[in-house]
Structure formats: structure tokens, C-alpha cells
Image (tube, rainbow, N blue to C red):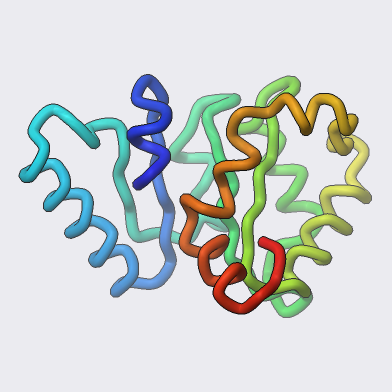
Length: 151
């Protein structure tokens, strides 16, 4: 929700598998809209399985990955990463934030093994305006900080 104010011209849609979390997020967005009319109209949350239904929600190049999967027990792998290329677009960026170190390593490995993804050079990472914000504006980043881990 914090990214809504930081990027008011960009649309953000959260796909959340857990029903209670999706309901809480939707209620929070409704409350923010009611308290501050005209704001937070660019953010929404839908209960759904991002791994299964993601390509049906977006055009190419419109997606921010906020995966909270279960590492190697997860049902997505290299073939699903390939499917995600449909929504990234050419030179699309994947941002991942998690409070689970094993999940972070798993995502690095699988995106790194895929020939259509490559890490950004350090100079481009340093110039990215969104990257330093993600640990502070995402729930996963805040949980990682509270646990004393990097997000």
C-alpha cells in the first residue's frame, strides 16, 4: 500500500493466496480510500493463486513479483519462471523481497538458471529508485528487519 503513494501514476495489484490476508489488505485499502478521498485508487488486492492465474491478470510488462512461495516444496519451478516472461516484457525487472532466507536463495537460483533472466550490473542497481524502498514498504521486508536479517 505504501508504494501507492510513492508511485501514484503506477497501478499495483497484490495477488494473495491466503484469504484472511487478502481480506485484511482489501479492508485496509478501503479504509485508506475513505479517510483520504482521491488517494489509493491505484492499488488493489485480489485473492488468488499468483502461480496459477498470474498471466490472466496482466499485459506484458505490468507485473511486480511479490512471491511468498515455499522454496523447493513449491509447485513452481523453471517452467513457471518461463511463463512469467510473458508478463515481464523486454527488460522488465523482477523485485523479490522475503523474510525467508531459503526462499531468497531458491529464487536467485531459479531466475539465475533461466537464460532469459540476468542480474543487473551494480551501477544500475545503485541507480534504481525502487530498490532501496522495498525493505521498508513491504511486510516481508519489515519482518526480515525485525528478525535481524536482510530482506
